[in-house]
Length: 143
Ligand SMILES: [Zn+2]
Image 1: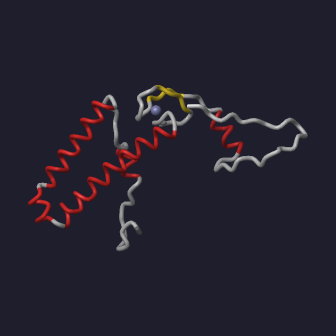
Image 2: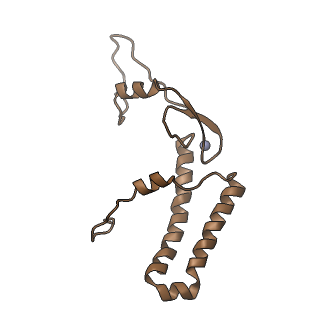
């Protein structure tokens, strides 16, 4: 992955364009850039890359998006089945939806093994649990 170079204008020069809007200040970006680089393997493509982050998982934004898009599609398939298993139990039993969910999960894992050299396609436990509030009110997740 290529990182954008930080260029400083010559002393006394007036910048021709406003600085790009970023969520991090220059000092914060310089502090990050000075951290030691660590070696990682991209979860999507399997290529080695380096990052200053403690737990980097992707070599570029496109691969992070591809990995998350796969989770989103698979999750949407499983969501409908799970809600039927939970709230339309007769239909779910009649259609064998629990077995279908299990078989779908196996097919996802088989695809991970054959197409992506077995790399993990799901979040780490702490990340997955950390993204879920421990208690929802009567409004559910608000959507
Ligand atoms: Zn990659």
